[in-house]
Length: 218
Image (cartoon, rainbow, N blue to C red; front, side, top):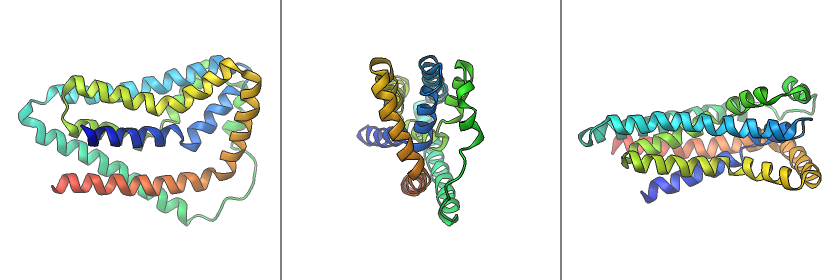
């Protein structure tokens, strides 16, 4: 259980500071309907994790205790696949030349016209799927049963959403100050986004691939 908790803490906090979702959420908060759009984004984000977690809990419930070996194999396989996906991303991005300054992507330029349904779609699309899959794989191979799986998924969801909730709370409590500071954070993240994503993908991908492979071979 301690190993599962440590894994979920690492993955949840990595997701909480992932540059792309953070930048996307700051842009959502900066729209004319920022508060409503921010709430819709967070709800869709949490609902996406909850839906994946529900599948994991169902798998945990469907296997008997004697099937724990199969359950563990699936969980380690998910971790290995997630790690390999991140390593491929790291390899591709590390071979690219450093991006030069240019116009913002089209979706960033159209963000001012965003409404709550569109924000919800964005919250779904910006989910870091390999990391979420790895977390759910860790829960699955831990074999902690349905109550333990629900508790673990809840802990992960809170950690993965903590960054968004902090920014949304700041916007609701101190809108003028939050826009100035979040704007500065957005500028810094945009300047360092590519390198941050590459480094994160490499480190977390190697960790997931190694732990998943060790688990399968043990």
